[in-house]
Image (cartoon, rainbow, N blue to C red):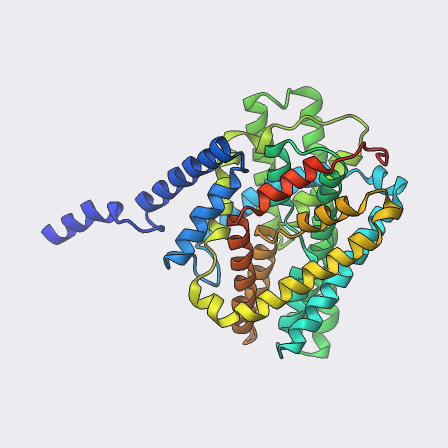
Length: 409
């Protein structure tokens, strides 16, 4: 009895990230450090969140390579849904119609990045499936990181508008391609092909319909309530959570649903939307947890195992995106300096790619053991790069190299 009593008293105070005390202290530390770097250095607050996650990973207290525990995964999914919803609501399809070269830039740099990453992975003798999965990483850009940097640093102009549009479009391409790859990996024989195609089609159509339903529900709320009101904000958050639960229950894409909802909402009406920043205080806490979790989702041992392949993949990805963006800069209406700033702004690789890889890793297959070290090493390099002032330099580039939005549709 005394031993049980002692355990009951001391267990909640155990200083580990997976205990209540450890998680609380990490939350406080991340919030304080984020505020310090913002007030003292004018760096985005996510710098502080990423630094805390990076230190946690370097100390060996990071997340398990195969993903976070259930409760933390739910928080990650909700936070990412909020960010994707916000990112989708900023994509103006009329602008893409008036400047078709911007859409061409998006398609070209996504495809070329995927091809370059696939070829580099094959040169490192990675299996075909691993190379394809890493190609999805090369295609994607984290809209959450871009959105936070732009909003916190008040970046405005063509570079910031374009990087938000390109990151949203790249995420859309990567999520769609990821669902196809996930379905293909489920096929064990030729007889299962049609069944998996039917499931993939159901996932696509169901995700689009659910996203449209979420957008319509939010539009109805916005017409009757003030979205800046705290109660309205919680109502919006409740609808996003409901859509996430339905998507998980029906095995739809939890990434595609909020992204489609945001795009539908932005382009379904000419009326400008005024959003509460990150859906209020609750959303801000979830976003903080998201970036700390992503920053800690690796370990030094993982980097030692897959670091060289990851570095080569990231270099190929950056080179491919830069090549396309610079080549199409003048025709699409930006200068060479702005194109270079835009290329740097397309570097972030964060929660979206992480969740896609976790979904792929859930498929029982021996190649998962080779995929996760390479991907987590890429995530580690990006976390270290983030801690080395990437967001600050990117935000300064977006602000300093802005031009009038003469291409706005």
